[in-house]
Image (cartoon, rainbow, N blue to C red; front, top):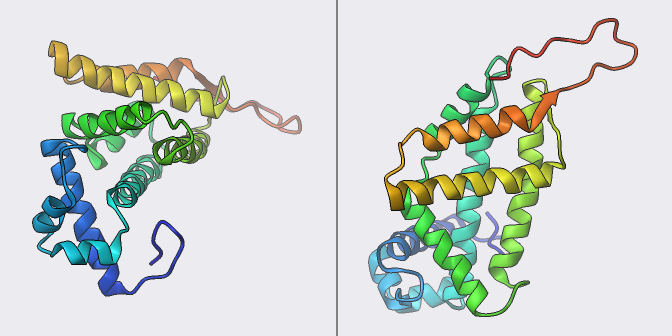
Length: 216
């Protein structure tokens, strides 16, 4: 296993780091990113402060690992949701939400990390770089998933990903602040995918353009 610097680490060290990441995520959600201390993270994970610093130089480095863990989880959810070539948008969205439920805890943590980056006035910093890389990777996965459904974006895949992210965040915010219906997120994602994609055009040599039967 490699860490965020690309350095190979032992399985035992990987397990220790994973426990610290899990503990940090729990505390970031419960207490906030800024309020959570290194000592609290170590205690939550069942380690000493020294064990923390044997694995991470500071809390910022641990935050990078938390973000990477979230990225991997979301990417896996997207891949799992689009494995069936017969699925439609409703099925894809349902599978995605089922395999990676992202409730208020996730929303709160990610928004605090974003606000922390903005307050630091470092747009090209840790969170900014992660956000860029995450969106690029997600755009590729979305394009691949659409292709498996016989669809393609009407706009640049990166732009579609930004729109989907905005829909996602807005729906969760509405649910938290206004008590919006729980199916609002699902409905908006399906609607966005339906109206911002189209059937993939057949190759010129193909005698007949295949009908798309997957749109909602």
